[in-house]
Image 1 (cartoon, rainbow, N blue to C red):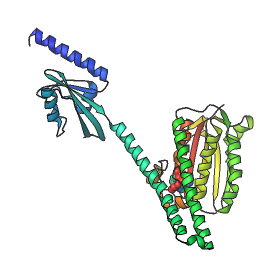
Image 2 (image 1 turned 120 degrees about the vertical axis):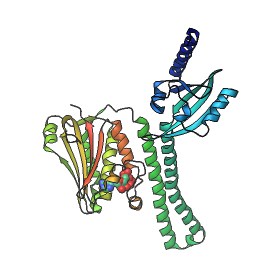
Image 3 (image 1 turned 30 degrees about the vertical axis):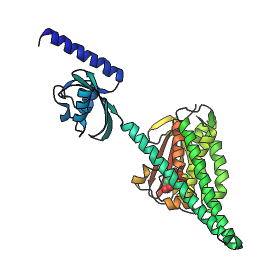
Image 4 (image 1 turned 45 degrees about the horizontal axis):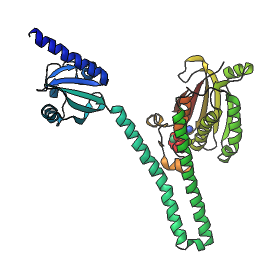
Length: 361
Ligand SMILES: Nc1ncnc2c1ncn2[C@@H]1O[C@H](COP(=O)(O)OP(=O)(O)O)[C@@H](O)[C@H]1O
Ligand SMILES: [Mg+2]
């Protein structure tokens, strides 16, 4: 290769490098025969480390790729293609092809995996919400029609239908309240609350407020403080950086679940301890609140998914109990906002939800 050609090549790759850096994406430079002239690290990571000098369509198989190269080359047309690659996992890309100079084409590979999965989650969510709202709404419309068709004149029937309608409307209200609550805590998640909040009064107030409800299903509801926490609390209150209302909401949702899904006539315990974290390792800068109930053991395949929005082991049961499927999602976001951890375990007919929060001391 003579010196002039070398200079031109160096100039070309230099220009390519600058442009690739500017884009901040995986970039490949090809000649008009599809051969790879240069590629940045991000592109080599996606397509393979040994692509330089070879035709790119060996490493990137797409039915419209060669046509897009031709169009970029001959007509100077900028083309965009969707491209899916199955390596260890499925990844989605957008390929953009544009002329670089008279003899070269630039390929920019934009990783769209994240954006697409966010989009999928969003559309699943909208579908779920619509479905959840539609069933009570359909029921309400059905009963309105029945009343209009003459049932309004029949006293007992009217009272019966109105009671069901009230329940359905209340279900819609709960769902909307939970959705608004969830969206609020999600929006706030990155801002950790700073106020010092004492834990014991929250738990005791909550237990007192819910004891009547618990008794209706024969549950006993107790707050238990482990010796390590009691020793500590004797000197100074157990406090965490937090937002009081949100923390109360966390424990209320967990106790409601324990009462709802725990076996009737069994004990529900709120237990406070320090020193031992959810992982079992000893640390003394956290405080752990466990909500424990007895009942059916939750199968492992469900455990990992319980905090997903609208995930319920038994949809009918949750619905009959007034559930929306959003309680644990709200709990997870509040705990995240408090820089805490949430762990759910279930074995030998005992389910424990453990919230570990950083402690002020
Ligand atoms: N303590 C528990 N014991 C057994 N299953 C539980 C418990 N807590 C939650 N679950 C399961 O997790 C699901 C999701 O809980 P949650 O998000 O609070 O929604 P909801 O209670 O409105 O259905 C429940 O429907 C139930 O199947
Ligand atoms: Mg719940």
